[in-house]
Length: 167
Image 1 (cartoon, rainbow, N blue to C red):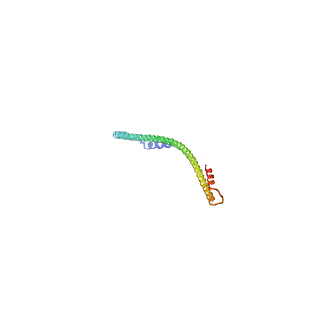
Image 2 (image 1 turned 60 degrees about the vertical axis):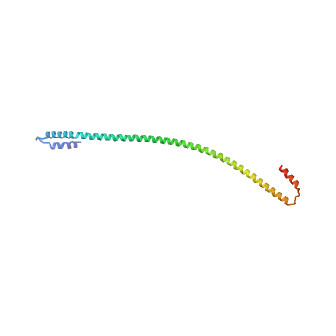
Image 3 (image 1 turned 45 degrees about the vertical axis):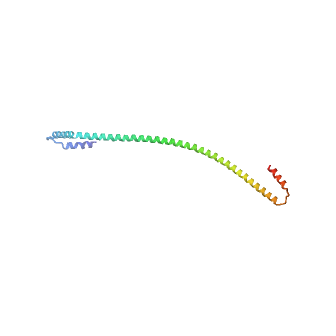
């Protein structure tokens, strides 16, 4: 600290004159006249410059604040849309689950009916095939009996036996 005091006071002490006349007063008057003239000439220009600068900064700040408000508004709208989309997704998911259960039940019932129909058809087909086989066997046996003379049955008796079976 002492160094700084010496550093600033040394030039004053070193160049101090011992009693000669100085022109400090006229120089001071010239300086104040020059400063006043500069102020008179440049004050309005400098004031206008800073006023314009201040208004341009304020305009930019207002524009930035408006953009910030718009971006916040868009962000809020986007968040609302996201929430709405989430709600729609949940609704679609629950609806699709319900529809899948309904479709599964319908497919199951249709499959059960189809299986029943197939079983009935197979039983009917088996019955038809049995009847065909019985007819074929009866036809073969009858053909064999009529062609061979091994069993002697009267035609009338045979016709009576068949009529009794049919009736």
